[in-house]
Image (cartoon, rainbow, N blue to C red; front, side, top):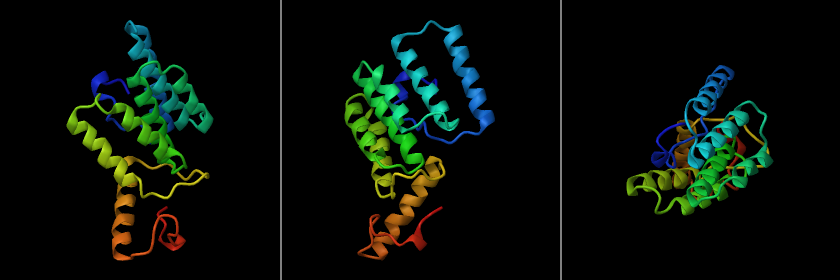
Length: 174
């Protein structure tokens, strides 16, 4: 989570972590807090890191995502908060994820290098075809989500009339 602040907006934060990885990352975040003076930007990035770790500990719920928005004082913070919240939701295919991702990308417009903007834009465009619901599914990493999205896109072109809204259950990805 602690990378150069300029390059943090196009990053993917919703890679599922094991308990051991969560503990290691929590220790790393704590070391960053103790060893370096914290700017407002660095404090916000650490807050995002805490929420991501809580999400993988199953201590954070959908309503806990609001914690990010309380301290999001700048446009960059608001973009990051929306991107992190959307990514965490879509990793478990929860409804509302695309709203956060779309708002995050809108806020990040002009803050990202053009090549980073299109990486994020294309990623969101691919993820848009995933079926989202109120019930959480097992978390998936980005390559798995993108693979599922591309399979659905391909099947949609080969089977006109199917969409994510009327997709037969037997075609659903685990």
